[in-house]
Amino acid sequence: MRFKDQVAIVTGAAKGIGRSIALALIDEGAKVVPVDVDCEALRSLRAEVEKRGEQILPVACDIEKSPDVKAMVDQVLGAFGRIDLLVNNAGIIRRGTIETVSEEDWDRVIAVNLKGTFNCCKAVVEPMKRQRSGKIVNVSSIAGKLGDITSAPGYGSSKAGADALMKTLARQLAPSGIRVNAVAPHAIETEMSAQWPDERKREVIAGIPLGRLGRPEDVAAAVLFLASDDASFITGEILDVNGGTFMD
Ligand SMILES: NC(=O)c1ccc[n+]([C@@H]2O[C@H](COP(=O)([O-])OP(=O)(O)OC[C@H]3O[C@@H](n4cnc5c(N)ncnc54)[C@H](O)[C@@H]3O)[C@@H](O)[C@H]2O)c1
Image (cartoon, rainbow, N blue to C red):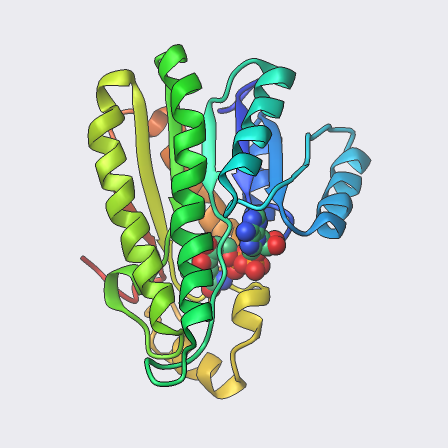
């Protein structure tokens, strides 16, 4: 069990990739705090976990709002006294072009994907510094590296911004024993990719050397690797989880 008794916050954990990350961490012995705005989906996750005989501490929290994030982190510290891992997974996407995207959609995507990530990092740094250990893993996107045709411009911009934030924090926090990394998935089978038209899905698969969409479990495995002691000499890295679509 690579995460026995480690306290792990996973944002956007009620569904999709975040849910897989949360379940994988539970399987590896972590005390998991799933954080999400979708209370009903959080309840369903809790029921699933309890059916397995395990416990979680689900917290309803909008990562856009720094006071809510701070309250969430205080709640976790009150319950467990420490935070070993933060997975910044919560994210939203909007479709469109520079002509069609609204200013509101731009602001919202940046607010959740970039500022929300900043809010969560800022809130956990003090306890992690006190512990002189901690791991942060962001769920970024191939769109942060390549841009994207179908998502609105704010999406790739938010992910590229979060990648730069990740590298900055990796440099600033390394002396305190805190590692900061990211995974960059492409085309994972979740609600987000389910919105794609069939033709787009076929085109995407045709462009993936490994010939299939990714699974949430593929992303979870990469996140757990970066968060584990197997990656103890890795910080500031963006690990591609893209079936070979983009190799850098
Ligand atoms: N699905 C893909 O193909 C794909 C590809 C590359 C990157 N990603 C990234 O992976 C992450 C997860 O995506 P997914 O496909 O599982 O999406 P999803 O929509 O299935 O899940 C996202 C979760 O985040 C939660 N969330 C949204 N806004 C929030 C907020 N303000 N505060 C707290 N929680 C919030 C949602 O309620 C949801 O449970 C995202 O950051 C996304 O950008 C996904």
